[in-house]
Length: 301
Figure 1: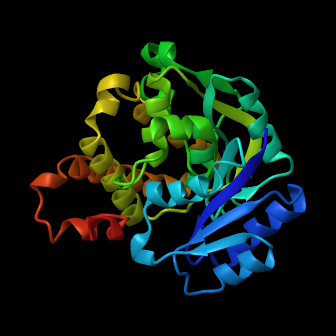
Figure 2: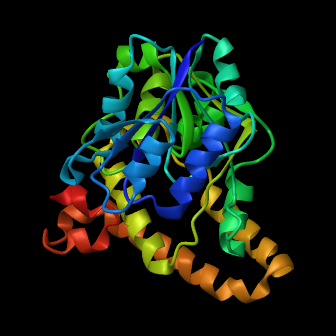
Figure 3: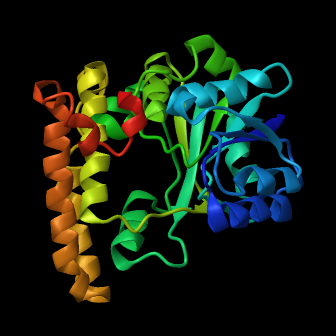
């Protein structure tokens, strides 16, 4: 199966240089399509120096789903699989080949790999990666919804791959969601009878040392998404107590590895809950306040 790599970029900085080098050093020079949202740093120059294809769009035209559609639609007639990376994900040796291999199963519509913490990740970020990206690979389909709930359509746009004929069949990514375009498509694919796969052997470094304010804004946007797309929770249900499991696991991890991070982790978790609840009720908020609560301000313009 032929694959290419697609990456939306904007002011990628030094981390983008590391990501671009990792692609060229480890992956045998596949086609790499960059869609850059008019970066003000040298992101586009780094991309061109790495021999990537670069298309420039206006920053105001960026959309999580729509921009990704631009990338795969441009090459849809020449490739079977599109592998999406974010500019801050650093793929490890053979990661893409291992991810693409799962598509030998014709029922797999999309797949995502294991995310490792970056070298500078704090203890809170390290735990988040350990909790969310375990060593057990799996495939999930419609029959697994009663057991897995919302996890049956979990997907990460930081390191993932999609079967292009299924993208065509199901209409690609939505162009009107604030984020979670990957979960939106995956939910549609699972309900249509396809499978999503998690490939733990395919690894990329990707993590964030979020502040409480950043966590609040991120979860505000997630709340907005679930409010605007209620069919996903209706069809898949909730996360099955994953939030409670996460907090307990985090406390144990920090108590063992960095107990001084527990206060910050507690504030982060409170910020997530408040942000999510407000996001779920964003339609009741004044329009001029909403962009200040959101991580993706351009969505509201």
